[in-house]
Amino acid sequence: MPNRYEDALNRAAEKFRRTAQRAADQGIIPYKSEGGAWIPSPFAGNGWWTGGFWPGLMWLMYARTKDEFFLREARRTQEMLVEQFRVFRELNHDVGFMYLLSCGADYKLTGDRQARQDTLHAASLLMGRFNPAGYIRAWNNPDQAGYAIIDCMMNLSLLYWASRQTEDPRFAHVADIHAHTALREFVRPNGSVSHIVEFDPETGARVREHAGQGYALGGQWSRGQAWGLYGFTLAYRNAKKPEYLEAAEKIAGNFIAHIRPDGLTDCDFCQPDTEERIDNIAGAIAACGLMELTVITGKDDYHAAALQLVDGLLDSCCDWSDGHLGLLTRCTASYHDDGAGRHTNITYGDYFFVEALSKLNRCDPMLWL
Ligand code: GLY
Image (cartoon, rainbow, N blue to C red):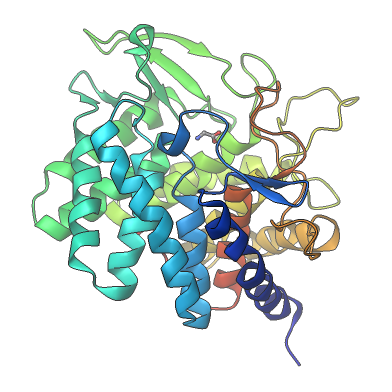
């Protein structure tokens, strides 16, 4: 008799085995599902930062089932991502999300040499965004040369990976410089993290913080908290620097203190009590980070918190019907609606939820490393 996590992962594989064919028929990289269809990214076409999560989800399903359908669907969409190298215009620091979970996963699971080259290409693009004043530039807008964001902690894994692959420490050095800037400038005394910090691109001096996708300046956008939690945990696994683990545990403590009694995650931990705004993506990411922290520290409290988050999602926010093509519900892109989705299914929520279930079933291929 499978336990509830094994049953959920098996059901997820069965569901995506049925519904992913629709994405192939539509010829798109799914961003979210609504109204019985897959919807492509709302901005920037296939250059939008989320494009790697769908192939990443397919690789997780392939690792679990060895069903070649998932391999074919992953490769169909990662070809569309590789084409973006030639467009270049929209690519930014999120090449870590985009190519580590697609081409990097392909190389990890199949040994494909071209996939390895494509992943190294992405790592070189990320290196090109490094400002020696001390940070990796997030976005391309001319007036945002000094912007760095907490989400980038997840993209650093691509750099550490590239250093291991090439036996060249340049990539890891850059990752460490950015991570130390993030430690100093993003992690607050109470264990919360800022979303956006703007630096002077000439000197590296801090200019100001921006509210970003959270409720307000000085707030705690929950997905940003989750990026910090999992990102510093991954930095520790990559570089083994104790200060990264210390930061990850501090951020984890604050996140755990804000888990709702029903196991779901508010969009911003400082949002008004009168506001019912959920972002389950944040809970799924945090569950993954907490499970990795359990392995590193041996602390059961982290595992218990991860289970509280996964149980909350299983109890009330999974749509197993084929009427909805995606799985996780009540995902929210930004606190203040930016047109990218509110209380809906979004593919990177499905990716992290399935990653969390894979960890609980001891079959996670750990695509980040
Ligand atoms: N990395 C952008 C976001 O989490 O929405």
